Image (cartoon, rainbow, N blue to C red; front, side, top):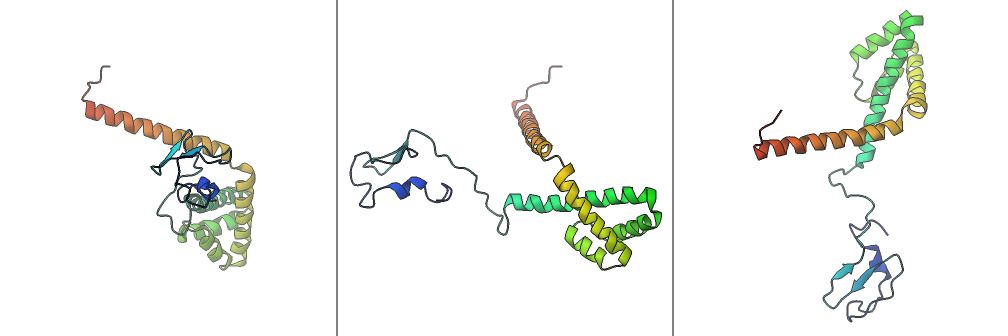
Length: 178
């Protein structure tokens, strides 16, 4: 079944005829370590193994989906910067045209930015296709996903430690002995 937030998976394995009626221990599968008592409480020799936390308030998308959308916008920005750097040295006219477009249009929405770019002129359409290629290549081959995960963990841990340390120092009124 789903996650343990809604219905514990062992509930589906209990006998259907009054499972709480007696004090006997039911023959449950080896993955379930629960005993049923007259008091209708569940006592566990192991804690629930819930896979994920429930995150409320993300109606249309999961937190991961929202991060993925933000990463797409960021990869678009990176691809534009890469293409601009490439054009600057070998095609100053295209560089200037792209710079004018970037300065007059927001990069906050990657798809909208590229959609508008493709409809402007044949030169910008070609550059938009180049940005799409660079964005895909950078995402698949050059971006260091493992490093992102390590940095995310480290930054969250460091920030938590700093906030807790600052709070303890603030509330304990301990003089800093340096």
